[in-house]
Amino acid sequence: MLLILQQTSGLSGKELGAEGDRVANDFLMGMLRMRRRDDAILCEEEKDSPARLSASRVWIIDPLDGTREYGEGRSDWAVHVGLAVNGEASLGAVALPGLGTTLSPLTPMLLQPANRPLKMLVSRTRPAAEAVAVAEYMGAELLPMGSAGAKAMAVVRGEADIYLHTGGQYEWDNCAPVAVAAAAGLHVSRVDGSPLRYNNADPYLPDLLICRKELAAPAFEALAAR
Image 1: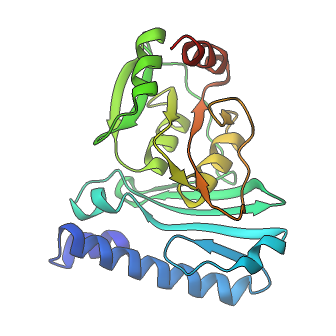
Image 2 (image 1 turned 60 degrees about the vertical axis):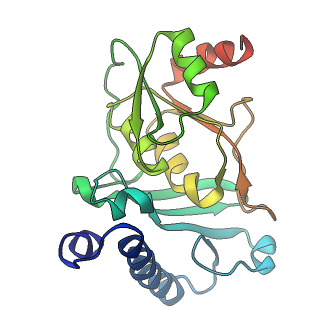
Image 3 (image 1 turned 180 degrees about the vertical axis):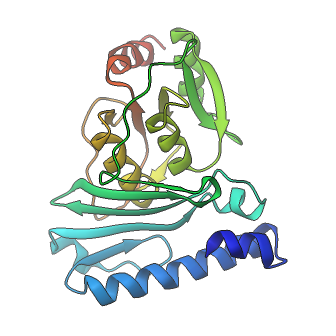
């Protein structure tokens, strides 16, 4: 649906991004409200409701993560559908339509050997200083990429080894990717090592680390050495 819109609508840039957000949001909200009407929803494109705070099951949705990349006709954008149960990212699916694949715990992937040299994912427009410093400390190459979901799934797919972000995100940016990454056997946490918790009153989630488990301790050491 989104891929067809991207390729045939004649729109581009912000107009294409806005239309993609609308189409994806309408579809996902319609499906959830029809099939999971008793569950709460936190979605980037929907008005938030404090009623979700008393719910144990909350769907956390980003209908189009990487709107800029989508509008530019790139492939590094994603669709996030995550389920938080009692504050934990319990289940998720991340679609990468531009690559023709969807990743979820229901379609597990074997982790590939680490890259040599290591590869660290960073924003293609605003690489975080902390990530750059950690990459230098660990001898990792920087790999710029678009959406948070695309970056997280690049670690799951073995295209990269570390995704460290300190530039600020919201729960919908990483709930589904974190669920998929954890199910794949990767380390997931805040950059101070604390767990990622969801369905908070303020959905702002400033930082995260997704990486191969053996790289978590060196990443924390690198952060401490800054």
